Image (cartoon, rainbow, N blue to C red; front, top):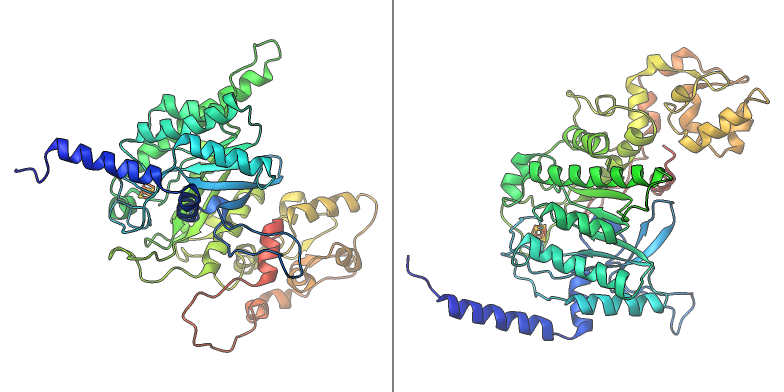
Length: 451
Ligand code: SF4
């Protein structure tokens, strides 16, 4: 086939393009590359509207230039600079604004520039760390080398002690991923979609098996590093990231919640992931025709996070939360309450004698309050008034519990209308084609992990 451009012309154009991207003003690059990074759910607050207190009441400001929040392994909330090295990418994942065929303005940082911005922001106390990802340029290894170069310069040349989260590329060589783990506190690889079939349709260059192999490699290195640290007589091992996480996009394909949660469960148990993030697909400018026109309801993402908590902290199995007959989560009720309503024969549970694992099954009582109940009942028989002190949602828990002064009639549990009592109040229909948002009380309970 005749080539449209000679190799020489193509190389010259690529060079010109690179020079152009590199010459762009730093603040402009930051604007583009922080905005392009906002779709990664692991630091969800970037991309929020700019706010500041100049000339008006209030304290503080949000710059909007990619500063977001994340949680360290010890539970601290830290502000991170969340940016991409570049939003140019060789791959063509249909759901991604940075894909090869997208018409967005491109920009590219040099490693020196990312280091400079990170240190400037860090010294001004804007941030406590960096979250760095990238579109794939030239090759996975080349891109990974650039990302690692930033972390290496920060750690070795500037002795940066802040938090670093690096997004790694599954196609990069294991040695490079290992090197990334040496400089980062956390590394992550986005699995994006739960099945190979969905990837083949929406992200044809990605491969589930390859991603899982890379995750397995990271898991082994993390475990190796922990084992070495425990040996008191061994020489200090080379540092390695303390955890890995991933993200799944929800609603871009037709995977059910059962499929998504099964994949998350495999990742937690098989690959020891710290977190799986669920990111509702949001339509992007100039979307591909294979994508749905609408994003999924926001509340679906929220229910998945609640179900995720049940898997990790409440000893539920995926098959209890979703079933083959009902493969999607109930959007009206939280998944623990839904399970209780489907399994009424397991209730009521006596707060004063039930073992921990049964207390965890009561809707509306979270892990923290289960511990408080167990501690308190060593000294006293608990009554409803004691539960009120714990600020439990009494309306939610009363049909499911027994206390010394409360014994719900079996009839109440068998009542066909019990589910209806927990449904959110009906709302006036609005001419609004957006997504229903979760109830504020739901959001608070999910954030505290009290489901
Ligand atoms: S590889 Fe990443 S940046 Fe590139 S198109 Fe796919 S999702 Fe977007």
